[in-house]
Length: 304
Image (cartoon, rainbow, N blue to C red; front, side, top):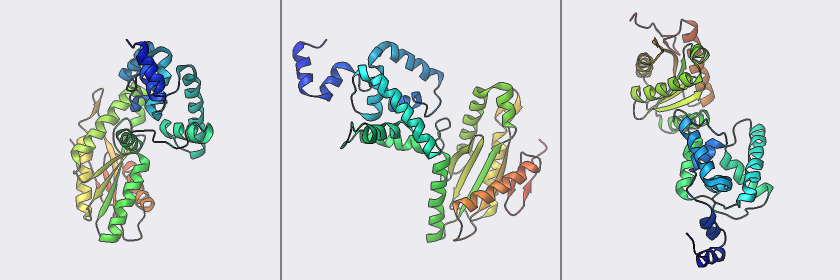
């Protein structure tokens, strides 16, 4: 328990001292605070942890949340209302941007541009900044790179192609009849399938390949250093075969895939994705559970 002298010292030290006297700096990890704000779905374990923290911390809970994200202390008596205001600001920002504005970005914008609470600051330690950067690049559920990062990394590889002639190919994959899984067995079962498919992608691709969740039940694999269409096709085939080991209530899952290679120096990420998407569409129209390459090669799945 703190002595009176300790509390006097805390007052002398400003926010840092008051923080140690009233709030636990590490009570809420930044990723959990971000999830609580709606940046990603929380697991049952995380929901339980949030409820436990609310009970333990009481009025200081929202001070903990704000500190986790901003590294700035706000007293419990104002932290709850400020949290709600930042959530509203986050929603407005997301609407203007047309995509989710993560809670960390919304908090910094709110404190610097709306309230003026912070003008010159270093709000987060380097490890926390690195964690947030990593989180912003990845899909929360699967851990794969997200849609935005996929395009950025694809542009990077195309830049390498233009400068050094390095080959690059792209695979787009879509889970066949995934809506049926969600409708029949629920979204938790669907989430499990997505996580297992992400693991399968990592198992069936090379260390140099870049696996991404492109959106919903669609995935992308950027094949670096690849200029042989047969090699790209074989990797897609390995993935297609590997996915059949994933089952939902006794029914093996399958994917359709489209494959394409960089066509030359004028290639852009958009044109490459469009061709791969066209090949994927042909795979779906051809009966699903197969790979179609941009040159029209169709791989009919084995009878087994």
